[in-house]
Image 1 (cartoon, rainbow, N blue to C red):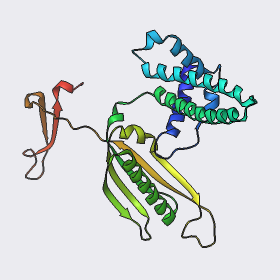
Image 2: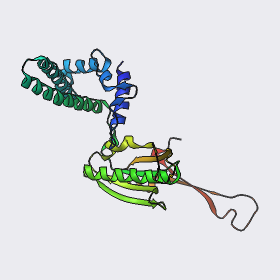
Image 3: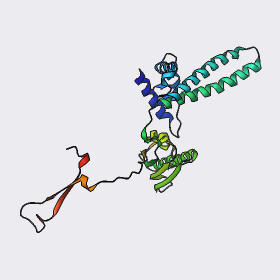
Image 4: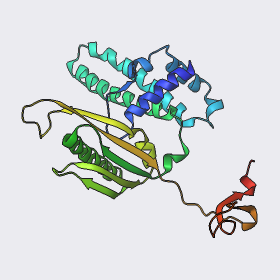
Length: 269
């Protein structure tokens, strides 16, 4: 049961993460169904709050958000009764409070989903972004240019460093291929789910008869490895050389034509 809703939560977080916010859904499960009373996720959260003492070290933030969610849902339920009050001003105030409370509840559910997704060692890393035009000709290149500009603006919004490494434009202002280095707080964590094939269906600027075309482009997100200082002791290396055998030219039996270097501490053979 736990693995089922964690998989659903992971798919939902993948859709919700990144600059392009999509509809609040979790694959085939909408967010409301995922948090339904008596469902696996709701049961799991109630157990977390119920065993708060044992889990303070492991999941203090998840417990705190789950408790706040329960409080906000209770507040929403109590405020709902005021909608039937005879006082019109009180009813209007209740409607305003309900709208505000619903937004907070949606944000808390979003936060819980992200807290359930396991973190990776590379989440704090900088990244390399690559975009490449796919099927669709010039329209795909125009779409690629728009996507690259979107990521650049998103990086500026997040306060990240954005450096263009490669940029190959098309004849009409599109983009064939480009790459950029992006660095900043949790840059890879926010961008790692953007990789893949992106599709657009629209009437291209190059279309004169108003027909809808489908174009694609691909995005690759690669974490930048951290620099390390590697020191290899020559005593840990075994160098094997091979020479050609048999009758032949002047270099046969005198030239090391094959060289193999083995690092002895990591050699498993």
